[in-house]
Length: 424
Image (cartoon, rainbow, N blue to C red; front, top):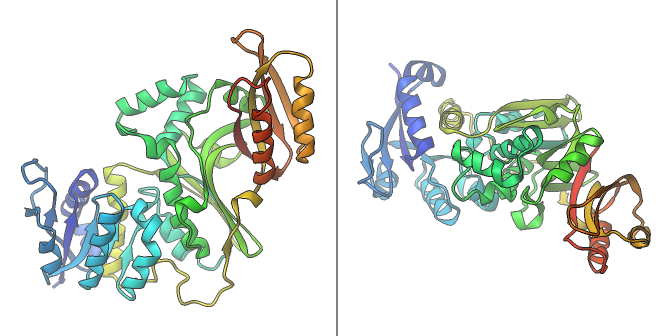
């Protein structure tokens, strides 16, 4: 006779409801794979007066989960950072295994939780890219490899907006509005469109791949809010697609981490990931490139990842959360933002008069930046021109200095805008 494993769910929203329903509706196959009966004993919600489409006992007292000695695994699905961290700590301190989908909390507190957990399992597959098993790929499937690089479309909302802008010629605001109507974007979409959500996910992946304990403020994070049709036209002209990418690269004993809009060659597999889908390319020193594709959000996709963690914990697979703790390896450090190198696309709006290009070229030359591609277009604004160009490889430091100096020119009519270009 199979033993029962009791679950407490904190946060019974879209994902929590899906977890409960899948555990009940797919009970036989889950039990067979786990080797135990998984029973949701209780759910905790903030507001008991709000109807929930689940048939389990509900409470608004979170301590009922922690004080119940029969509950083996706590699933945290409430969101937020500090309150969720306190709940996660309390679950571990009460010797209960923890599963969380909370990428924001893990972006700030993943190493703190590992120290508290010691040998208590923590599952967090659902925190990055919903139904794509990228956490297990990095922890297990690619365990023999040094990860040389990874780059990923980690946010479906921003990818949908960019797809609409590129394929349907929508402007940013129209594409965002459509995403909200379809339920792909929240009423407040800021974390998706400003790159923060993708940044949280990249930091979790970087912990697994490199043992890097970086926080969001330590890395480059930029969003898609300022992309317009000129940028898309330039990208098309030179064979690029624009994606919001999370990028990690190892060079020597340093790792660079960054999230930003990126022009990538249309022939790359990751450039073909469209709509709300996510995709991650991982390059290992032994296996080469592997690509992971699938639904990055949604109740059932995220719940699928949560339940995979339940099964893994029941089976006794409680490998260390971050993979590197207490193991001998060459410590890797985070590369400074200023020393990161890239190609860059720059968009300028300038007064259309002789000498302007010479001024811009002089500033770029002074900063050792050379131009690899150039377009000049008429502007609807009278007596002005749009200047679009791409650079050869240079540093963040050099490009920042260049943009600062260009902005001071009287002939520049609009804030310069840059997009990094990944040609590799």
